[in-house]
Length: 126
Image 1: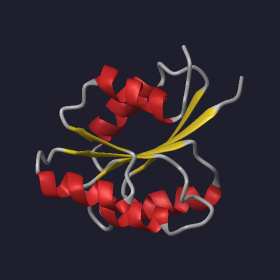
Image 2: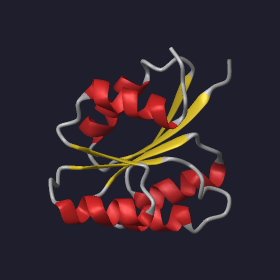
Image 3: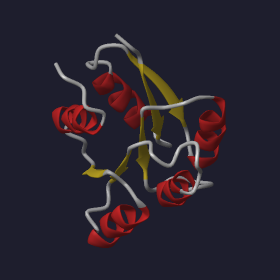
Image 4: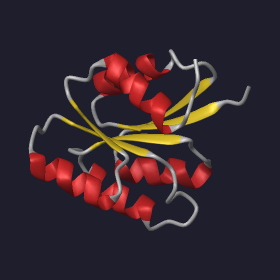
């Protein structure tokens, strides 16, 4: 069984911890955390990921800017990206989907919804 590498991009340590904890329910999950989009780009340059979960509202570089950079990078453009935000705003969701997000989850995160979305996107069978 292979390992699954997940990159969590979230400026809130509490949210990163919640997402990490949720993803550990997936067997062989390896989780790397980044505190903002700039940190995420550094981590992306150091390895390959099966899936990226990114918050929209972050300092330095927000999730939408990060998403557009990922989608324009030949080495990562096919990696599924889940956008997470407190915004219920349709405009953020629409913008994220237009930029190439594979899924959109609003906070407060329902851990089952998150894990099921991740499983669906990377085709993990139980």
